[in-house]
Image 1 (cartoon, each protein chain N blue to C red):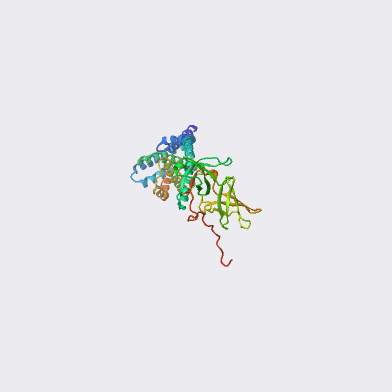
Image 2: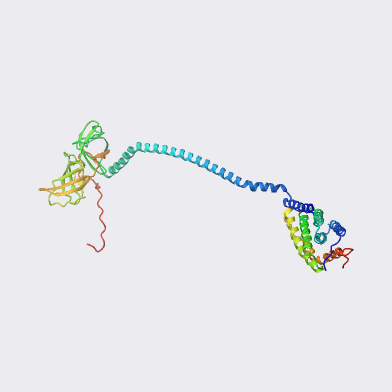
Length: 283
Length: 161
């Protein structure tokens, strides 16, 4: 009886197993293998993905470093080139401004380059690269777009020396822009000068423009000299200190006025001041 | 009225005849399904002797599937064997009292048989349509149940009718 039941059980289980195996028994084993190998496959794919991404990142890093090095070299090259070109560019800018000034003044102006400066020294001046070869003579006015520089002190064959306007032994005939009061500018050094012979009765404001008066026959009337920095009452005359407009320590290109220019030159060198608009109804 | 147990010979002869009819009725699937259910649920089960019933059910399943060449045979045979074992166990556990109980039990087992066969064949092969065999089987339960009742009860078994 026992063997009969055992046989029946085996028969039932065997038949059931046969049914479960289905039409393609091999697929169960492959499915089972798939199930068991899924974790390791997932790990392997993640490991491979991580390796690929790391390889990619390393390659990107190397490329980025190479690119950065290349850009750095290029930047250094450009910086060097810019440093080399900077003086020429600055000179070119200055030349352009000089050209603009030359077009504004209807006189025959000549250009020269400052090749040396002895300005820090007492009675120092500027050395120009042109002299008698350009037809220069003593006492020709020298100016830059910002304002007057001084006059030619001595002229050599191929060089000449400029006496700057702030030199103690320099003098320029000037006038104040508003009051039109005239005086003589005398240098104080360090791009400052003093206006002499101004009456105490004159009204002078700090910041007022100072122009050439043309009376010295070195500069025509109306060229900018500087701006009033200090005004003080003196015993006999006003003490007016002027800050010169031209950067005398940094001048490299200058224009030379013709000897004994005319008193008046049109149009005026300095543009008129812009007044604030008045409101209607106010005095 | 408790159902009497037929003789082994009679039952085996009836099972053999039903198996032959299943084989011969291959061109008529509806009839074949009904005969198949009759053999598995009514003729083959025997309380206390599960082996012979299981073998007859197994044979019925294989013959039915073999006559139609299923892709992977064996699902029907396994379901038949399971149902026959269950029916035989039920016959020993809850002996039948009359024809009505017999028919009711056959109807319930027919439904279970239809589900089990469908599931087993689906498991062994591929999903397939239900068809109308289960319906004809269930509809004709009174007929083949009564026939099986008469065949199993007649003759020199218990002598009581």
